[in-house]
Image 1 (cartoon, rainbow, N blue to C red):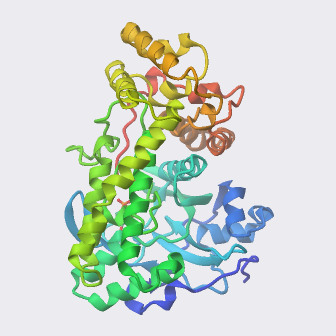
Image 2 (tube, rainbow, N blue to C red; image 1 turned 45 degrees about the horizontal axis):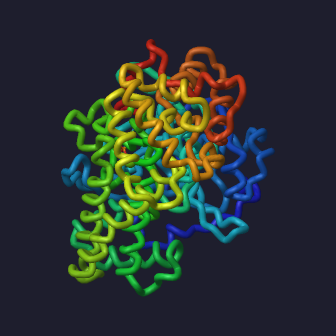
Image 3 (cartoon, rainbow, N blue to C red; image 1 turned 180 degrees about the vertical axis):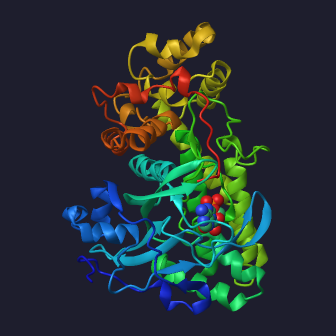
Length: 474
Ligand code: AMP
Ligand code: MG
């Protein structure tokens, strides 16, 4: 056994035993095979990327070989799902196999997702399918490259076994990283069991490691969680990202985007966009995300109500709007290159969004193509061409004295469109071909660059891939 040079710390295990269950990973599948690995994520752990070529390390990534100095554990948490208290959940198919202290003194959780059942699996099989593993792997790297706080992905391993969903599918294990995987639901768990002291223990544990400047100040810390969550969701809205399942058990206490499931980037701009096929009411529609984030922060506030006076919680929660609005407006202004504040700017921004909505213009391209010739941009608006032309001439006048040369570093060319993720999935599943996955992975890690030869992946879905459905089943 070996730790492969990783500097491991049993940090979470320092909490009382009812915060988790210590257990080894199940040996899922017989011949795990590395499908893809991410050197950028390896660097976060000070991990030598040459280890991806070491069969013994690939066994670690599949759960077949534990690290020597870390006792793996599954965390318990609870949560509100679709607005309803769901009671106890927990890491039902995730297992923490390490916490690594890197040379920058950052602690990183290393989790296997899909490496077997835990005491929190409920009716689930503890497994993950290749499809959803590739989706999480690509999207977390896309979000990181877009500058949006997120968990990261280290590797995908094919387990070689079949997993039963609506149909049989190939199984996989994702190794994901986050500074912490603690969720709002962790706090709700102990609060709703009436275990106030444990809410405090967990809060102090999280603050000491991740918010050290706030030790002893629970109110300031909650305010910071509000701020980070608001900023993260503003970034989602600006880039056109819909998470799909904003349950409180999927909300990170660090304000990270976590638990990629039926997410979607907007293609045609529709504020009512619902990416999750199972979300029939549209609770988690694109436009609802800020309101839902606020709802979730209120659920967290309740869970912290024995630590922080109610008036203070209300006051901190009320800062959400300013943090969200301020960040969102700054980001939208930046997307159009509006540096100086001029009267009529909000109308200009609103006018563009209304036009995009009416014409169902592609969200990403509507911003990206503003840098360049008029014709390709106008072509996005189809029959609303005349209105688009009129908006564009107003925009050109408004930005005459603005420097727009940096816009391609603000408006990405590539986002992880569903059809692009699907293309990578089909190549791996149907043809055992990882070359397309690798190409798309590289586009996602450099989304502002042009990538000659891969323009096709910047385009809206081709007609035969317009109606892909994604759901919670993963
Ligand atoms: P999610 O909607 O993916 O965030 O999952 C909600 C809860 O269900 C979490 O506690 C997961 O760990 C658990 N879960 C989801 N899929 C499975 C599975 N296949 N096996 C066991 N638990 C699962
Ligand atoms: Mg989850």
